[in-house]
Amino acid sequence: MKLLIISNMAHYLRDGQLVGHGPTAREISAMAALFDEITHIGCLYQGASPNLALPYTTDKLRFVGLPPAGGERFLDKLLILFYIPLYIATILRYLPRADVVHVRAPANIPLIALLLLSVVRRPKLRWLKYAGNWKPDVPDARSYRIQRWMLRRGWHRGQVTVNGQWLGDRSFVHGFLNPCLTEEEVMEGQVAARSKTMATPVRLILVGWMLRSKGVERALRVAALLRADGVAISLDLIGDGHERQELEALAASLGLDDCVTFHGWLARTDLAPFYTRAHLMLFPTNSEGWPKVISEAMAYGVVPLASAVSAIPQYLTEFQTGMAIPAEDIEAYAAAIRAYAADPARWQAESKRAVEAAARFTYAHFLQDVRALLDLPPT
Image (tube, rainbow, N blue to C red):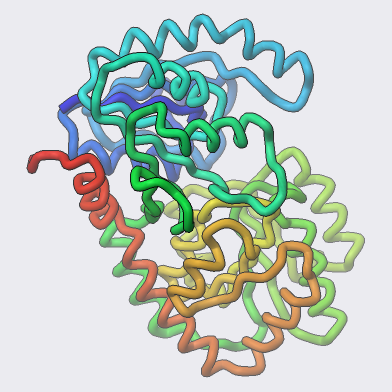
């Protein structure tokens, strides 16, 4: 069978080799086990690739690169109009050749794909993934609201997968776990977690974009509160973004230079030592679906403290590990860390449950779910 993927995923050429957003490249490479051919329509960026980017690990994939458009500036948004005819023509060229189409929303090119799927007939097998917050508590980007509205209407005539389980959704909307772990990584994490104990300093980790909207400033202020209370901590910040320098300056102004380290983006293979050392993951973001980095960290016995948004409270309650805390409640994050530090037995029990739950986020489980979702024949 032939699979067509339509996304806004960022790709680059690194020394002549195609690389893409690492977590997604790993997920798509795993999907190759279910299909004979994969064509991926995505964005090709110029310039240096981030360390986070990885090559695909399958020879079944053909990449169709489109110029990216959109951004914060008005002129960047206007550029979308210029590229729309190219986006439409490319999607229409490849849709009839596929047996299955997989659209990864929300983003600009997937929005156009959703519109086209409401009028074209081929292919019949359709899988639409919404990767963000399916039912946000506060308004988010207008294009996101439009795409959720379209997905709920069912004009696309496909199956929709989202983060979490939500009352009131139609039968074609399914809660789906985001895969991020190989069987080998699960075993590696289990071994690492066996010897971990709660001790001082309490080791905290945050992995993601270095942006205030992703909760990095809040994490720094949590660290400052703990330091003021005499709690010995360390905080590893892994990721990058255009606000990184401002956040580094904030850390210095809070007197955190000796306990907070900005590492930039690291390759997936370089994250394991940080997960192995960490006790708690901080993720006080404004909005999210279910961050894959939480699952990755849990595999190594890291207990998550994350925002009470989207599916995060559902999953942490189900897994019986960590806490979902209002994103802006810095005092509550600090109090939670103090509580775990004061009760090593509680942390140990939740660390063990985190490891057990992480085994559900393997690519093997994911492929079983995709096969059932699309009713694919055995390979």
